[in-house]
Length: 291
Length: 85
Image (tube, rainbow over all chains, first blue to last red; front, top):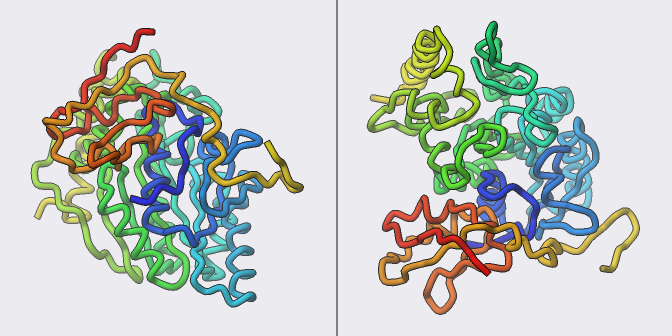
């Protein structure tokens, strides 16, 4: 595979995000411009005065990566450079919360920009604060589990559905544990003109608290438990869905992570696990993961 | 290192930082067990496992010792060994 994300970057040992970026760039190729919002990726890939990127890369602010990419795309169009891919690669904080307005604008104007979110379900770079991507009952530093709380009291925002509502022609979810699927989805997004949105599950060892070597295993488990269905929407219609051959109980995924430790220690935790299992079962029915 | 205006920097220049110094455990590959599926190369977050003369070898200048390769190897051909100097 071609390697367009150089070693020497400062990501934690066992981080899923560099693998995700490497796979995305392998699919997109060297003729690519990437805009990144503020986040772990920006911080670890460009410690001044170095850069891990082997493609053109630009960072401006936390909220405006989609707007910057829109400008890049418009300029390339003006100069007649139709073969250059324009990507945004950003975390869930900038995608689900801070950059939401600019993303909506980019989708609305129909720029040929592929927005890819590596989703680690909280603000990991600043110390594990809750984002609107954090799932129910997750411990973060701003939704701590304790005597009166089981962690995050709000559901995960359905960002792919928001993209579909913008009539984005290609919307997909992916996981770092399924590299063939991820690369295929990036290539498919690039082949369809107009905006695209891909959301990639990328576990964070410090925020989710697990052994560094388990990164890929966890991203596989979240898919096998049906908590993270792999699907794609093409022109607003549900397309290919990754079928799950043997569905695993959610406990297997939850017990491997420190952020769900309270569910196994606190009284009433079993009831909460049942609720999480019900969410997984609902996903299996909604996306037809088991037939 | 040469810097230009507007904070432009050279591509791939993080290579000057040898992150191998972070490592506690080092991956040791048993090439007899290796079936050359290249999953270690695909999953390595440091992009530091490459095929050298047909064998998959980690570049210890950059390997942080995260053990993702050892964990994902379908033939358990990679063992993490405590590195002592």
